[in-house]
Image (cartoon, rainbow, N blue to C red):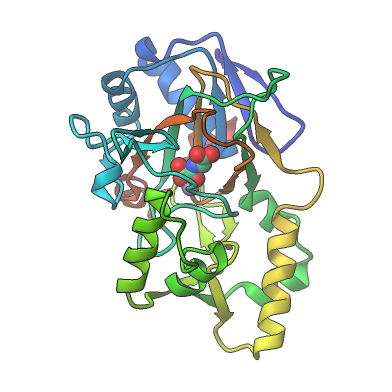
Length: 308
Ligand code: OGA
Ligand code: MN
């Protein structure tokens, strides 16, 4: 092992020290990727990548996918999805208020992405200098491992129904929008025109690269567990979600400009904290790793991560 890791006291969020991701040799890259696979969320500070550099580094992990709402992707670099509260000439620079609930990304699709890389370009601060707009992370792999056996057995073959409408109601997209808020108005319009989309996912997913079992839960999006009565279903969903984010296991990432955080979309959930307001500015660039490369490995899960 040659990379230096500074461990958090949590299952994830460990920091890789003293590297420049612009020029990692293959050996260090392989080690970095194994650490990412193994722990699910890694932090690399002090990088300040431009869009081209971020795309080049991201592609070393495999093919990328574009964020579904093209209007939030950079025009010249559409692999970069912009998250921001900045509006220039009446046009939002990116998606505002995104991800303010415990989730993994793109649960609405059959094959959600492998993971994401988020780079901090502008970070809001409180008057006392404390960073605002943190992102919180919890491990769904650790959550599975630490469930009592009877719960593991109970959920082994259960599936849950995820609903776009349940989610919209939960996050308030369907509330009348404040017409100052261009973004909320757009979302409300889009939601009003869209019918409910339902998708069923297994509650336990096998990580395609490590073989670990991960709990599949998303706050506010799941209507019920197939085959259970509504009360039991709700109680079980609450138990599982509360277990994933129980006290003592959640990593809070306080952003600094130049940070890279990568999360694994199978073994981690995340939640954006909206504790800041314009004129405090937040600007983040995300690339999204496609699951296709990860799934191609499914038959032969990687052993390298098991040796670390
Ligand atoms: C995301 C996301 C959180 C944040 O990009 O998928 O949830 O803090 N971002 O911006
Ligand atoms: Mn997200």
